[in-house]
Length: 325
Image (cartoon, rainbow, N blue to C red; front, top):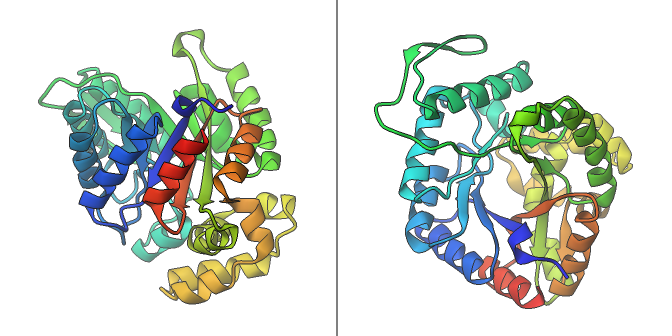
């Protein structure tokens, strides 16, 4: 059986903040260990949503999954995270990473410095939370920056999918949120985690390899698969070529989906999602099927975050998962 405390859940703020708070409370009642709010500029603000969730819960961990350090200055991002952690009485966790390539393109950002910017953001945030004043000149600049309040040390999880980011996370972070739902991807990522941990300093402490798995749960398995199309479209569009090759997915089809997303043609993008993409990039089906798939992921990963969409009815999906566990 799966220990519910090893499971987290992603809540997408495409829904109102009050709804995110309600679902966070449902996740806590189901016994899950963490709630992560995803971030896209065209959704509602994840930190506002997490603040509402903090007021509706008592014990569950809370954080962005993930925040990107491009459209918000990394120093400001560290302060927002410290504010959430203060509000949640020390339950914060900081998920950080380069973000979704398709939607960031709308804002004129690229990922040319993704690994360095993520690493520098993590390093600067830790110094700020420790009370240091920071000078930094790298992928971003800071001149004598500091926080005007006391902050706690907050665990940092790096969102990753490629080999370099995954290895970097295992070497420097407290955990990785590896974007993968299939045992084949998790096994590959486990090898990259092992490579990073081989260079990890002993004083960095323990490391959590979390499989960040898109999931869609319903009593009707076909309804579960249909609900999975939107997040799988985003995953397929952002998947690097080696991941597409690992699952035999057509590169041109994935690229066309990304172009449709960037153009705001979401219906076109979602319709182009193939059955192979659904099988590769989402755990979709009945609660019993999903729990069985989770058990398979935990043969390699330390924990699992159930990502969007959760199901045609997210609240029902969380309740069904809690019952199955």
